[in-house]
Image 1 (cartoon, each protein chain N blue to C red):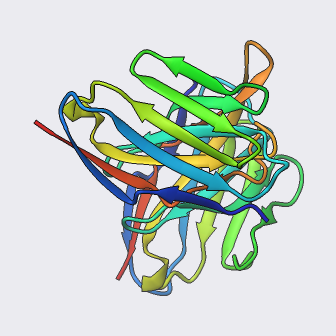
Image 2: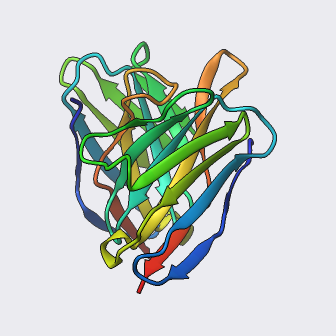
Amino acid sequence: GAVVSQHPSWVICKSGTSVKIECRSLDFQATTMFWYRQFPKQSLMLMATSNEGSKATYEQGVEKDKFLINHASLTLSTLTVTSAHPEDSSFYICSAPRLLAGLHNEQFFGPGTRLTVL
Amino acid sequence: GENVEQHPSTLSVQEGDSAVIKCTYSDSASNYFPWYKQELGKRPQLIIDIRSNVGEKKDQRIAVTLNKTAKHFSLHITETQPEDSAVYFCAASRDNYGQNFVFGPGTRLSVLP
């Protein structure tokens, strides 16, 4: 299957600092990628849709100035958590759709990044 | 917007028994319903999906049924094995590209040896 990577896999930072998370589609191009946040023992919540060549679209309640998304190329999207605070500690997962044979898309998820803000 | 409910939240079964997880959705325009398995600290993995033009789909020990009229779909796992233990998420989407991709709250399945 298609491969989506994330970097870093985990990060610990001090409150007030910014953290950048990368999401890469390794063997296919993705004009759209999705960013999710998952708190412990909870479901995946869509934060935003990253669009190559245009601005990201954010879900209701997600601060676009706090969670900066840049879709730099057809294989890379970055999520920057600015001025991180302990409540931002979570598991962040990206996904990218790939068109498969039969002309349907399948979402491929990255391995996730665990962010801990002290 | 779409709202996906999932039951039960936890499920324990004996090895070899069957497990059934049910989801309901609210948006009648949804037409794609995937199921994901997520092991602790790992990425969700697609295990089976179904589109609205199909009522049932099976892949070895896993099957999914869809009732569009009632707006619910179910995951069936037969002959469960310990490695089936994980959290399972259902999702609903208006399109299989991922927009309006809403996950259910998840079901923690434990298969007891």
